[in-house]
Length: 427
Image (cartoon, rainbow, N blue to C red; front, side, top):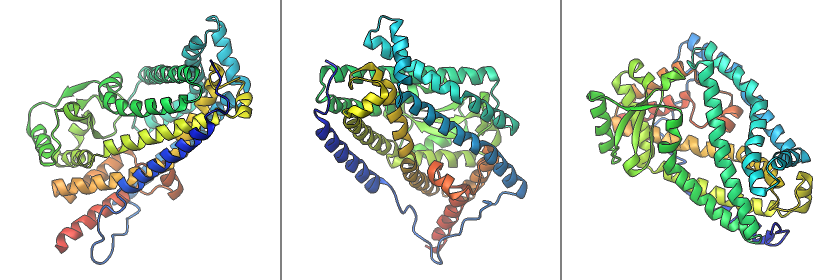
């Protein structure tokens, strides 16, 4: 059975609204809106240069000016291609053409059609991605050979296509088995997928792009373990990622949960930063663990996925939309391009909301790092070194930062560290 029509449309819309409100409540209640009290005399006004010299600021601004148009063009091209495939019969025609080669079986159309659709979108944006890689090479940020770059593109596309095809296949199977309530079952599955994905990402996806080795025994390794213990978030291991195969950028992160939790350092850090600055970065990442930021993000993502799935259940019951896409019903495999378009639009709409939350969470992790290390000088030096090496614009355009900025600006982070020091001095 492929139908569903408008049956169950109102419950789907009601569920989308309820889950959307729940997600909004989680955002409001779990987002740290005020991470640091204002010191006496008021907050420090961020220095737009973040203390970098004129040449460093000019280089970072030139790099950003070269990349921003490419980022916007790639975003626009991806959206246009997705709309053409999802809101016209172009996408359904491509799916049917692929399906005809395997006897027209609906499941085969999905398994072959999804990779074909994603490949079409990727090919359109590939020249822009190549240009962006040229810019990164020109500014010394990328160390990838073109062979490795192409390999990363192919692996990323293959993983995305495989996972997306399996998810879409499961959704269409549910639509055919439970045409009235498929959106509810799919919502539950989406929530579970977000949770499972958070646990599996560090052990399944990360190794596809990088190799990891334990940091040799020494003072830095011991200090990182000590920081984790003091933070109340012990880690299983401290690993070094071979990031230098791809970039000169400096970074570290904590991934995994419980017995899989580990600190990962870019190998670029070890030669370029003193231990106290590396420890400041690690302390920031451990701050995320101490405040359960990953679990909060997983909860937000799960509720958002559930709400989006229910909303899709309502939209896919709308006949005119299905006819525009060239599909007869929600269970018709030709609906797949429309589903992928809705996912693209949902991701775009959700980006600024996610980033508003992310900036506050990152600011709180900065405060956690300062509380843990008690070393604002190392924190400020680290921020300036990262900005200089990673070519981060210390004071990007407000609109750009509002939409795309997942972290506070370098200028804001340094000003916050100075406020932290002033509060300490006033106690």
